[in-house]
Image (cartoon, rainbow, N blue to C red; front, side, top):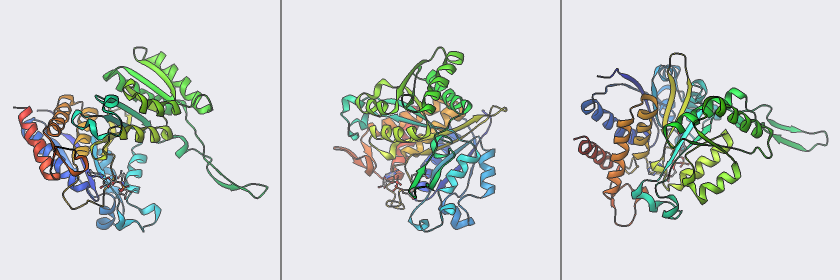
Length: 370
Ligand code: NAD
């Protein structure tokens, strides 16, 4: 029996608790069938925490997040809390988690599952079999760089400004995540910046090149300007394996890449912190979709992005690759059988709700592991 792994579950608001319920069923199934026991604790976060505890995330919850081996997050926010001041809004919960756990590497896979190849706006021939990973630096760069602000100049005109800034260690730590991932996949890393027009971009390129020479000579490294990368992602996305890039370019490129797959309800993500001396690494896993207040409480949300986020958690926090593969395969097979939640309906498919989709995954897990 493997040692217990500490898992903190934060379902959040809207459809968060609905889709998380289906993950809990997968966890229970693993407890019963796969001889893995998780120490699962659960807490309020976001609007639910504001209602229950008066803050989007409490200090107790933050401590539990620091103690956990991995965090599975739902989504936060909704119209009920829209009028609240900026620093007390539900979204503060995720920002505080990212900041205090120093979660600097955001991993966004863009995978096209065969049964959903027609859900994309791109031609099936371009995206069939797509499996790429975008690593976005998520705690530095222009979103946080100083100086920033709006000032009035001597001539009375106003000027707004932000600063793109990266240190050697900030670039190296996120590039290492990219190199390590590449080693476990197709062994190709593409580093993306604007070295042609930005000093910080040139510095990024030189730093990644030096790191490859020193630590990852076995990984094939290429460089690409961010504007070309956006074009290439649409023209021929399968040329990529792992992409590593800065906060702002990653923000844009990962949204672009996720839409290659065509469905918000299918897309997981991970955000990783640094490996600590103890060997532990903070990590938070969440679907990329929000709390979908328009469908909350109706039992129609697609639970697959949340379930696939759990599969990522198994893979990247616990190295339980076989179990992650099993869950991903169960999702593909259920989609292949023609069952669909409303968001991914296509011709000739059968519409099911959140609970039936979850049950079907469990049945498929049973079948695959029989
Ligand atoms: P959203 O992702 O919640 O919804 C966009 C559209 O996609 C909606 O029509 C919704 O019904 C649909 N959708 C999303 N997930 C789905 C699923 N699993 N199954 C079926 N359909 C799904 O984005 P939004 O409407 O812009 O934001 C709603 C709230 O979520 C806002 O308060 C926003 O701030 C918050 N949000 C939170 C996070 C987070 O917690 N990390 C991320 C994005 C948005």
